[in-house]
Structure formats: C-alpha cells, structure tokens
Image (cartoon, rainbow, N blue to C red; front, side, top):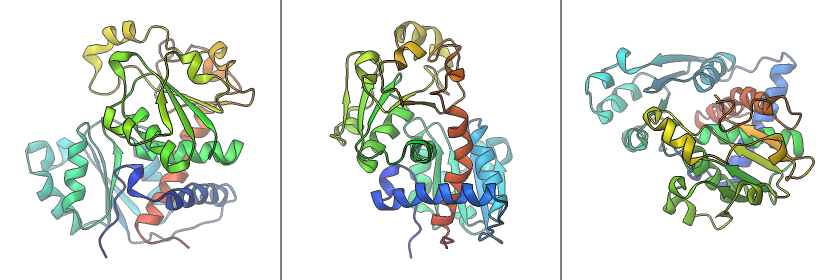
Length: 302
C-alpha cells in the first residue's frame, strides 16, 4: 500500500481529521491518567529541521518516546541536505532506515518533493505555505473546551501566511466559517482562498471578530522575513489583537496563537493573561495531536 503523507490538511478526509482530533483527546486523557500506550515500539521518526523549532520538535520527539518509538533530530549541518544532496536522494535513503519523516523547511516544495518520492509517510512540520500540524492542535483545543467547531465562526487577524492558509483549509475540512482581516499587501494566496467558499476577506479586525467563536493571530514577521520586520510593523498597524478587540466576539470566545508571540506587536502585552486566551493549552495539545497523527500514519491505531 502506498504511504500516506500529511503535507496539508487536504491530504486527509474530513472524517479522518475528525478522528485524529478525537484521538488526540483520548491520548491526552491516557497520558494524564498515567496509562502507558506504546504501539510504536521499534519505530523511528526522522525529524529534518531546516528552520528552528521548539513546539514542533519537542512534541514529535516526546510523542515518539511516549508511544514507544524513537526520534532522530537532523538539521542541515548534521545531514547531506546541507551540502547539496538532492531531496529525492535523501528521501530514498531515509526510507530504507526509518519509518516516517517529519520536515520543517521554508520552501514548501522541499516537503512536496520529498513526499513525491518517499515510500514512507512524510509530515509537514511547517513551511512558508502551510502549518497543518498546528491546526490539529487548535481543533483539538477548541473541541476540548467548546465542543464541535463545525458551524462556528472563526476570525483570523494578521498575516495571510502559512497559518492563515492552514485555517482556510481547516474551514473547508472542519466545516466552520472563516473571516480574515489582513492588510491588502499581506493577503493569503488567491488560489488557497478560492478553494474554500467558507472563508472570506473582511475589511477590519473588528468586522472579523464580530460574534466570533474563536479569534486567532500569528506573528507579523515569520521565519525568513526578519529583514522586513520594520516595514511589516507599519503595514500591520491596527491589526493587534487586544482584550478590547476580543470584546467584539462572543462572550465565550477563545483566543489562540501558535507561538512564539511578539507581545506588543500582533498581541497586546496583557492578552495572554486574559481568561479567554488558551494559548498554553493549545501549545500543550501539540504533543497529543501529533501522537494521534503518528499513530494514524504508522498504522498503530487501536
């Protein structure tokens, strides 16, 4: 059977994604109760990081350990990818040694190229275009705290970059309505937006959050954009998420951010102390949602 890959949320069916979210919650409960579950004994995950990471690396590495498997960390300095070895060659070599590969790369075609020739599962650990693993954790967090997200309203404030693209895909796959407020110069890619009729651009952050169930933002300058930081601060003036902006959403609305955050830029300095903020629960759920993903891709579901 051909390997399944997780390059974007669209690689899975809505039913499969719903199953992953529910399973992430089950794995979180088992972990909290101290019940061991080790279906991946003897399995190895190679983690290829061309960009720095905290949550993605720790969640996959700890997740493989908790499931009984092993994870190997590779950065360009540790591998031939950093010396110009073709992606396809590295993919074929790793397929003979490990059971799955997770890749974090700036260029999305590094991941798609790897998956195109890989005989083992390939996971997108984040690229400039998509960040699907984060969405699994976000959907798990919302379900855990507020129930099904289907039919709800989500507001995305900020840069039309990888997180925004993944929220657009999630709107279609999970069945919620998405409003996006971003400067005209930083809108999401037109092809990604056009593929989801449940996502639309709005003029202002206030319009986006009106009666929303969930409000999400991300940094204004992502990895690879450091030289644009000052220009981006000017472009995104007025797009900061604050407790006052959240007041325009439903009283029970939640606030999420994939982290790391630049407090005082995309979020006010006090926002994470607001009871509507669930960013640290969201971050912790990366562990369990990624364990569910590994189980699924490696055929280890109970």
